[in-house]
Each structure stands twice: as structure tokens, then as C-alpha cells.
Amino acid sequence: MYIKIKVHAGDKKNLLKQKTADSFEAWVKAPAQRGLANEAVRAMLAAHLKTESKKLRLIKGATSPAKIFEII
Image 1 (cartoon, rainbow, N blue to C red):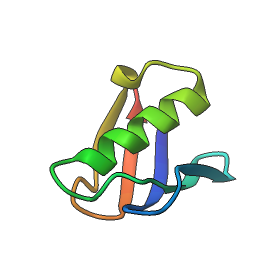
Image 2: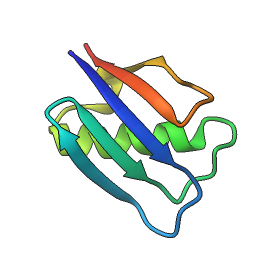
Image 3: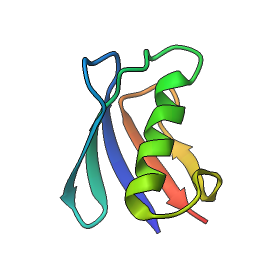
């Protein structure tokens, strides 16, 4: 299953909002440097989906605000 997510890095709060069944929008405190925002989003998404973060793989968008994760 693929999950689309739009990320706003460097925000004042951590928030995850579900738009549709397979798309989310996330605001994270972590900066968009060295993959910190990607890891913060992965952790928030895993908590929301009640799965381990290692079961979420970043497929597309490592350096972009628009990302696609795969649940493996």
C-alpha cells in the first residue's frame, strides 16, 4: 500500500492530518536537513497507522515536500 504525504518541515508543532484514505499532510518541527524531517514524518505516520517505523519505506520524495511511503 502506498501513502502520499505533503510535509511542512521546520514548523512550530508536530501535526499529522489525514486528507483521504491514502493521503496525509504533516507539519513537523524537525528541519529539512540530513533527513531529519523524513524520520520525524516516518515516526508520526507509524504511530498513526499503529505499525513499526521500519515497516514504512520512503519510495519517492527524499528531498521534496511531496513524499510517497510504502507499507511493507
